[in-house]
Image (cartoon, rainbow, N blue to C red; front, side, top):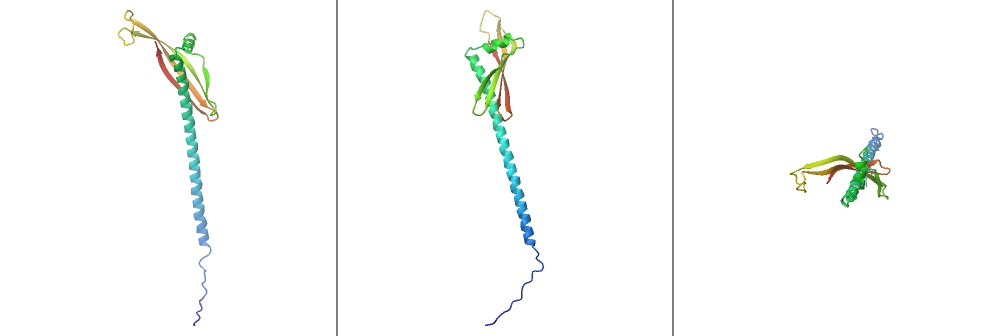
Amino acid sequence: MTNRQTAPVTRRGERGATLIVSLIVLLVLTLIGVAGMNTSVMQERMAVNSQNSNRAFQAAESTVRSLLDDVYANDLTLLRDSMQNSSGLSDRVTMTIDSDKGVSGSYQARYLGEVIITSGSSMDADESSNQLKGFRYELEGEASVANTGASARVFKGIEYY
């Protein structure tokens, strides 16, 4: 049996370079992770804002539809009020659309003037008359979502004969 004696290995050139490189790589990976988290938080905020804006728009559309349903059911109170008011505006009607989510809205009618349809028009139902009188209105609906700053306003024009 032979005994080999090995000379001790000297590590004079290494002075913790591996530790420093590892820490720098770890720092870079941490920064990438933090940047990724910030991006996902921002995307979530943008998605919530978009959802609240869409909810407000749909609620504003719903208020105008509610007014149209009244008109189609021959409840012309708001239209008459707007004609009789000197400003041409009816009273604003407020409604709660979704109390759980804090969505509320209102609607109003604005009288824009008379429309005269002359003879020869498809709207001229009376053969003995050469004019058919109609009325033009602008329906306005607006809605907002509480505590979000999201709001929307919708306008719809109608002619009533």
